[in-house]
Length: 194
Length: 147
Image (cartoon, rainbow over all chains, first blue to last red; front, top):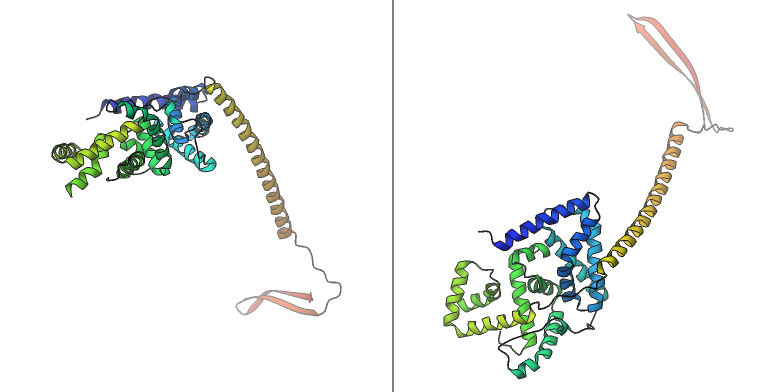
């Protein structure tokens, strides 16, 4: 059974390929159609990775410049969005490695709000601290774990898509995501009996 | 042993990435196992904390800035390609010159006439053509070599 999500993805991919062909045919505007379509997703991934409000925009621009440069070599073997996300992750990794930002200037609680009905008022007051802990915990993860976690949590991609983007097996995605969540959870709470 | 299997797959279970059989097994097990249920709650809690809540907002002039950067990068790559071309041309010129010099030395060997030879050897070569024990044709050449 083909899920609705898959059908949507396939349709989207066919539209993307049409746009890419127009770009390859010399229509520059087609590239900006792709930018408009994917800029939000790419910026969310980059922001989760870089954790710096001011640097994220530059990184997103760098991602799209890389896409522009190599789009003519895109061979349509994979879906465009998996290709785009892999470019995004690679640029973010390169950026982190090169500039190695230690602390983010703007705390993540500007976008990560945690409304949890199970929390008591006292716990709600502690939310800010938890958000900071979450940020720190994600930052502490290795590149491999972080990439998997971000692709899953930001875009809600399937394990299969994440595997394609990162060029690893589905089993590896499963174990990395499991480990990433345990590490983040341990870091946030005193849940040491996992 | 079974708890270990369940706990390893809890994350994938919450993401809906398991087969129906595995899902059924986990559901059934969680109802009866307090420890695994606690771990499932832990994963739910972590997922709720880490999942995206809000979109990052790019500036309004993001696309125009990107356009400018792309134009700039195009100019840069053109400059680079011009440099690469000129380098290629220089290498090609050197290659052509080298080949021409090689051909010159191969075809037009400089004569080595020695004005003061150390030794001189004079000899005669004969080529004779016989047919039925009769000499039909003969060639005698006198030669001299100087070192």
